[in-house]
Image 1 (cartoon, rainbow, N blue to C red):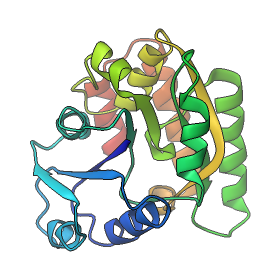
Image 2: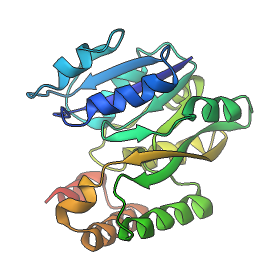
Image 3: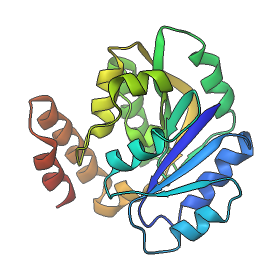
Image 4: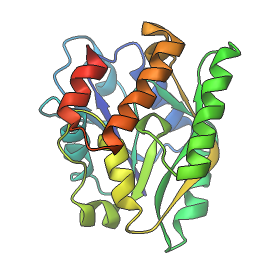
Length: 224
């Protein structure tokens, strides 16, 4: 069984669509909403779906995802952002690769929920990054075998790059696969400060992370 962990904080605008897309392909999967202190209708929306488990946790994406993951019962853990919709066939796509013992986990192909051609450039860059480095980000829906996740001790409690850190540690346990099935994410992160600014900022953050700058300092740069 697949357990889906969705960390949320004031996600009333997106959460319903995210859950509906998941349920459309697999009504039996375990869905855990890890809420970091929402004060909008997020919890109300989550609880309107039968069988969805809602957990109240300390704020922080790593903390929230760990809380959900360590209470999950599935053999496969899928960490999904609330503003992301999985393409039809996602269950079969995961099932088709996790039988391979050499695979630790992986992610979906990246896509942005906006028809503008400028976003296709972003998608191609992400595709190239994943092809060359097997380095997906959290907005691609990271999945991992439960025993691998437990062996690694879960996500680190850091304010940024927790997804990259996990993927890099997963590589020590097995191969990372990028599925053809898409995870379609909202363009809000790109639209907030502009596509070019956001793209440059993302590359700067990754460069600084790779040369050893602490995630606390990176978060101050990223969220200012």
